[in-house]
Image (cartoon, rainbow, N blue to C red):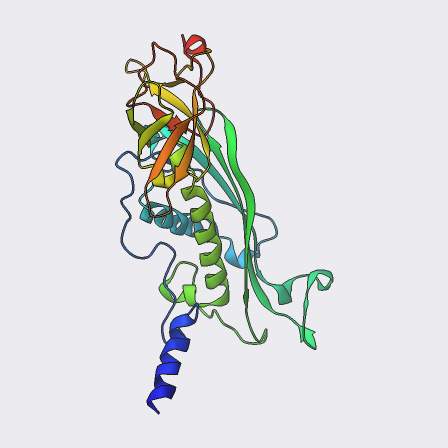
Length: 293
């Protein structure tokens, strides 16, 4: 009997959801603290596509609120929205999002329904079209349609009643679970952008003649990723590239160590007039010193 009880506990621990508890909202838990200097993200008002049922017409602000909360809880960003005009001017990224799908597939046209054994499947499907733009360079750094599908069971059962999107119990419904999956995936993708923002990761040590440099916060960078080295102009607050010995933008490659820690390896020699200790990194090319003057 004891063996059966222990096996049951192991089985429940291995499940993605606990049938004895309600689902929590995206971004639940304590706030992370991974960087002392966090990039500001400006979130445009969420849009709702024409294909979303009018029953959920007010979903956009609630979806945005949940996304904002989840993004803040990563500890990787400060968040600005439409009313935060002061923060907008310091934003590093702008996020545009449109909810394109929010339905049970039993309500979709027959031509796109899928089969499940001997019947048609009834799935809750949520899809979010999201684009992130680096405001310093004007380049799109992330663009994807994120999709989550959760089985909704018997299509004849009303699984929502008077529940509204964003209410605590809504997250335990099929559309709530799918929404949470989509938002968590969006946050995970955007969190990887933090290290690409100038001013977040810095070079802490460098010896002349060596290609190896120390990094602060290098763990948030991509292993094997190549980054541009830059410095901030204290007068303007703008970042410009650091020159190598041939006058080109200096770059480095990041290497994560097996037991933790990281190292940066310069891909060329810095120019003699450059002091790269204290310089920062950027995934996107920075303006050159000549073009910024």
